[in-house]
Amino acid sequence: MKKLLLLLLALLCISAPAYAQGKATVQILGKDKGTVTSMQVGGHILVDAVATTKKLGGTVEIFSESKQIKVAFPGMYAILSAPLKEVIINGVTVPLNAEVIVSGGKLYAPVQFFMLPQVQKALDRQITFEKNTLIVEKNFSLAFSSIAQNVNYDKIQLMRVGNVTFHANQPNKHTVQVTFPNTLIKRDVSQRPKDSFIRSFTLTQSGREAVLKVVLGTQGKVWNMAEENGMLVLNISAKALPAVQAPAASSVAAVAGEEDAEELDLNPSVMDEETSAITAATPVLKPAAPTTTISAAPLPTMSAKSDIRIVIDPGHGGKDPGASRKGSSREKDLNLTVAKHLYNYLKKQGFDVKLTRTDDTFVTLGGRSKMANDYQADLFVSVHTNAAKSGTANGFEVYFRSEKPTDKDAAEIAEFENEALQYEETHYSFVDKLLQSLAKNEYMNESSKLASHVRNYVYKEPGIGIAVNQKNAVKQANFYVLRGVQSPAILVEMGYISSAKDRARLNNKAAQKRMGEGIGKGIVVYLKEEGRIK
Image (cartoon, rainbow, N blue to C red; front, side, top):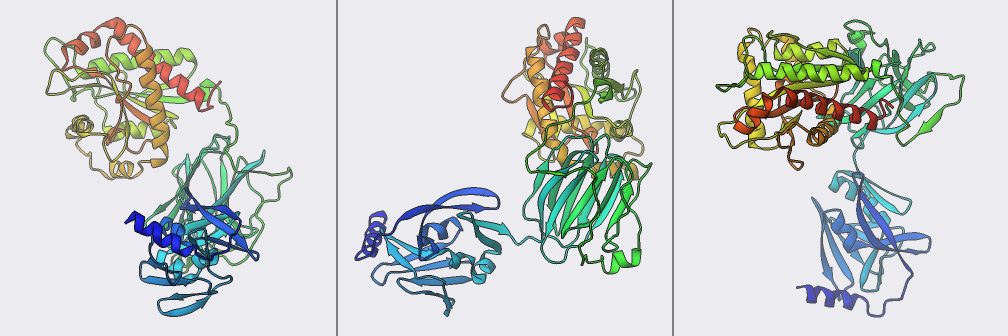
């Protein structure tokens, strides 16, 4: 078959003139899919039609004797013939801006062919050609443009295509959320400016809605969402912003950090019935200082260690003993002992640290994550001891939260740790359901990084005596205690109480202290590498 295809392509070359060839890049949904051969003829760019079609997911039939190819996309076929300046699409002749050409064994079509409305409709994509790149995107109506930073404020600037409406609110002290109903975004965006106004933000697609979530920095106190110079702009500042002439009722302004902040009700009838289409460009801010637009992540702002709040959660407690074995301490006691060593280590380093329990007290799983949020924690570390049916399972592990567990064992461990729900009289209360719904995907990457650093430094710490498998010690699972925590959060399983070797080390006082210090060193290095501290 391959030889036949080569023969057919060779026939296409007969009597074909030679043209200078180049390369054009194909980019699909933000990802580089390689290059195709191209040429420029009479001021028009032509591309290898067979290779380009295949990169776009279509199929091709070659008719060498007539110097034609048949291109097929879902619900559409096209016949390209050299040397015609037209294409037949679903039986209808459509003009092209240049002739189809055969050269060097390839059939070249004007790049305009792949941007025709019929092709875009068949692929359900927007297709453009810029800077020698064929760009294929979703049919978007909203796209991230840039983040502009100034000594007085930050701006997240979004480009809109057509009519885009929004609702903005502040679900908690740390987060601003803007929802765009019936809106498709160009692609997901996740950035971490980590300056005093914005810690991080994401723009994601959620069903038919687009959602902009912003985690505020220490000086992110005041915000508004409005239109500025044709862009939709979220402004965040430390002090009251200049008066905003809202272009429509969808524009929202609020003071960040107020207790129990709720979505502002500017005009419910307009918001619900019309959602206020934005129609005119209205400047929002007139900065005194020049503004710098930054496309790459800026340098992070350092914080004093005393400004970093870390919540340490000794797992289980009170009527919930956790795992246990005869002749050994109970899990709840081991967890508390190591958590206190970790607490002492971080306090000596100068951090602001809090324990969810300091004695043998029962605390609900939802209550632990709520405690972290009320404390405005920058990090949350839950300390546990593992157990398994088999006595051969052993070693240190550290988890971050995900709906999908790493493996079956990770799922079983999460199920065991979640059994504490049986001790909670009202664990399906409204508050716990709310906490469950607030699981923040934007912290998943940071939690993963934190988990990796903790694994590395427990591995390096001498005197612990519990194995740390560098390849699979970091795992993900759906731990209830990590749900709803508004910061990077991990759950440490120090070792297996069901393993005789691990159990001996877990009950060793020197090893317990080393374990706490190893976890603490991983936390410190994570904060340094993230630019949070010097």
